[in-house]
Length: 373
Image (cartoon, rainbow, N blue to C red; front, side):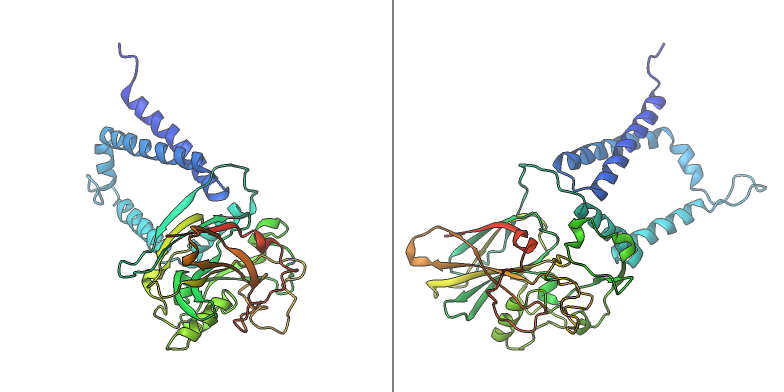
């Protein structure tokens, strides 16, 4: 007598692995999960695929019957399950790919849930490695080691090189949304009278689901302009650019070799300079994140400023970090230090030194080191 029924075993394995996948999916959607949860989800997911193939083999005839539109007997009704299932699946996939608002809302809701939950204490450091070296460049290689801080919540940033007089030399890395002005998604307050005076994503004082509604920016690039995002870099890039445009209106104003997606982890970025012409130069990084309000930079601080009080939710202004690099000093490692902030609504490209009202924005990054080769 057989001790194990193969069909029962396969069915129970499908059920148990599906149950684990369901739990880990919910955790990964709503919590700031670590690599252990991701590993469980991945291993059990592949196991489920293998078991599902066995289940499909055992039930292939039944599945084939489900796909038939015309019934075997003329008196039986037509079965349109297959085309309906195909239409539903394709529609959901297409809507998700093109970020149709209902799908985008679910995605952003998950981001908000993960950011709202307190991050578990962990000594694990996860780094993203990015290589942006250009073969044609003959200058020194720079390795920027950025360790994210407690408030590293989907920031925008740019890294670039200036000479000692402050003239723009070249970009090192610029997030693609800044490089192309490709800000697509926006949120608006349901009640315009609501005032924020703390970090919206991590304070837990705001009911995000009822406070905001999701939307999409217009097609016009000029209407997506976010000059308050990185004003120091944007004005500096404009001054060095032949087209003199602060906000790009279509094609990238920065070469693709220096642009990329927003890296949402600590990262180690490798790049190189075009030449050795500058023996001494400034390496700068400007970074900013939305919704990081505080008591001073509250949402009602500048009511007559249409940019700050608009739907960009700039909150605390961008921060600028700097390292003064001397290629002749034979110093291999530098620390990038906080040297100032940008204008709260991007009115100009000045570097402001008053930082007394900056709070959580100081913890967007933990530290930045630069290795020079």
